[in-house]
Image (cartoon, rainbow, N blue to C red; front, side, top):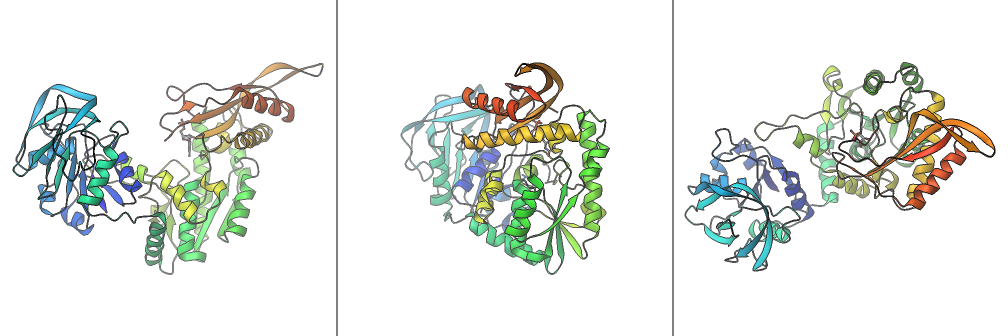
Length: 509
Ligand code: XMP
């Protein structure tokens, strides 16, 4: 286990990713982590992350200097290096020139951290302060034009510092430096795999749950499905998954999920068809936030009523992921677990006095997918594109009716079929149809038509925070358009959305 102390750098998650890619488990902790807790985690090494602060600032994040007395190797990156050097008695000064971007790195001395690195390479700098004096025991190991102490190390105490960011792609040999730290310096073995993670998690869930019952809100998305698989493997029949069909799902989605989870995966599924309730409540509603509020409220009511029926229920399982946890705490404060958008049942655990189980809370999305594969979850679910909690309600722009939902559903099924067939489904973050509240004139056969306009949205993205419209081949777009106009009654025009996020969003509402 490697601990990354979070000094607030935008690259923190990337450090954790790079470590885990080497099959070494790693956890991000805030700077004020209690030293007894840190010791109890038995880390093989500690990485002090970068951060936007300057150690001169009064409130700059600091961790207890005791961290340097644990006998554990430490790697300081950027601000983390400056913090370490300052704490150990060196000097950090304000730089005359801020250094940002590519810099040529010259290796002066090949120590354990820089073993195998080219004499001259590149690195990615981003700092204002500069180290000007090293504590006893440290030696300079690399320089750049503007940074005379770009890398330094104390091999006896096994403390190392890099003024640049080894975790980003722009430092081409950064990966090797991190590998050197993990394997040569910390002695990690690289045996952390999803199989090992699953075995540990199953054991922990069994211990925590005992003979009690667990409930889980299943949405059919990757996170809740993998959570369900893991818990089911641990406690089998003691898990009940509640699936609320809100009538806003895609074609055959509800029935396929039900079949998969009950017949194929042999899980206890409480399938609640509440579509009538949702559609009635949405009647005449056109405002997107109003739609979301109504859907969220009904979902909670239905879920709570179902959950009350389950005797001996003591736990609520949620598919919270690591980024949700990291992003919800500041570099200075402790973790505060946030509840994700409305499909997670916020408020319910306290109300029903349920304890939370969040077995994925230390995993990133792609690790969850790997775990899903390890657990035998069908590819159809492991690789599902994200689908919003309010479902098709926010893709029928304006008023929602059964008829309009059906038009959208039929068109969407065609789009997904063609996207899959062309091999684009996995490459796209999301691809879907949006039904617009305006009509246009067309001609079919010899007849004038006056029908709906449908938009196609397809984007690439890594985290949905930003997204680019997908440059799909014109032939593919043409085929989709043709099929939709010919096969879906009520649509006579298809348009392609060429807006990126920002300034647009992925969904239209
Ligand atoms: P936007 O449209 O904000 O979407 O660019 C970013 C991501 O979030 C999804 N999304 C939602 N998910 N409830 C959800 O569970 C919602 O109300 C909601 N709105 C947007 C969207 O599909 C995309 O993946």
